[in-house]
Image 1: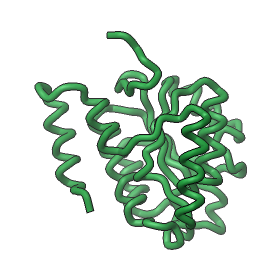
Image 2 (image 1 turned 180 degrees about the horizontal axis):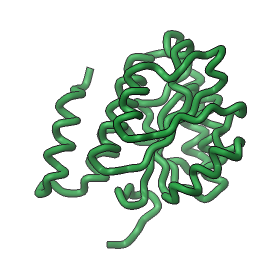
Image 3 (image 1 turned 90 degrees about the horizontal axis):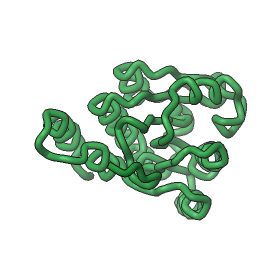
Length: 192
């Protein structure tokens, strides 16, 4: 099959979760949806055996990764790396972790869309990654900032999708055991 940069492939994809932290999430517009969708994405990572990585921005002040996301990260053995830079790619240990994972496609979730997520996505694009932004797993305090950030990232070349759309794209077909496992995740997270 022809490898298209705009088509997710389970053998080429990874998940990056950015700063879904305890003291940030209560102020994020639709923060519960962002948390829930991020957990759903990580459960999908388990089904498709996608490597995952997470970041925390200044956890001393912003707290640790929220419990449900932290638990889902542990289920896929994803490290959580503390970063001082807004862009995950602006911190050498994270750039090194991305190189070691060695996947061309990055499924992205996190907060805030217009700050750390946007700067990371722009840097990933500059580093020639194919970036898939799960809009339902990304948030900002302001809906306007969220929308403008999605627009800017799309203009820069990121592919805007949803967690569920990404899951079906990664699965490709319905006649495999992996489809049944993916469907269990879909059923566990019905639309709200």
